[in-house]
Image (cartoon, rainbow, N blue to C red):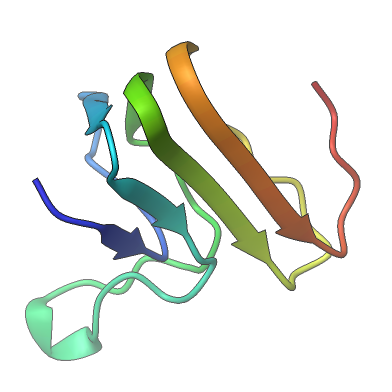
Length: 94
């Protein structure tokens, strides 16, 4: 239960469901996910492994920051009450 920042989420098939608790945030910041010395290197803005996102109450925040003019696709649904902030130079399709 802490604020979390990730550049990509790639799971190889299984979707990772996420619940953001009240007062915490998940930031998708669009950077490369993992350094090459960890065995793989996911490209920036790849969230194909991210499943359903639940905003778990007041001030639960999903923050999407992208400087890449590419489409960010979320595989799951966004449910619950909270705050969604999008900072991007790309188009938002929803």
